[in-house]
Image (cartoon, rainbow, N blue to C red; front, side):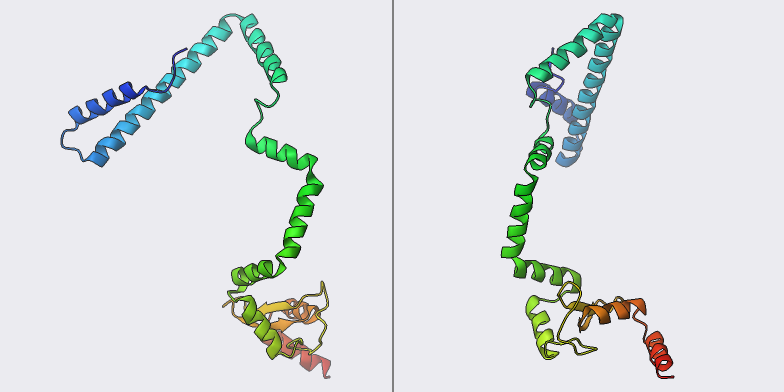
Length: 198
């Protein structure tokens, strides 16, 4: 079966035809038109080839059945031929999941500071050094309740303004959740404080 792609000689012929038809065109315009025509010719060839295959297979139902059986037998004899690179990777991960998970855990453990630094820069636009300086300036305590225990999962929460993304301070888990429940609203917090003092 003839190749569906145009040969180098055929491509040159298309380019020559474009130059003859568009003598005043710039090099870039001529190149773009040549590529467009080559692509169109190859699309037409593929369509014609597919139409011929459909006609040839539909002409005799046994041909289609035999073709399917031949394809199935070939794939069984060559199991990796029909598998994509992505499919191979997924299959390898499926059978070696624990190995991949252990690698990820080890990398996170060995690069904990780097990981934290990337998250801080991405989420809040501050470096890990700035974060540590902020914690030191707070005396290693929550900016609101002054506890020295972060609570929750054992890490301080970086509190920030959701409108400006500016970091306000570091909070323990309970204070951070409390502010969130009050939607960071000073008015609601003052009303709550007034209510508690009644």
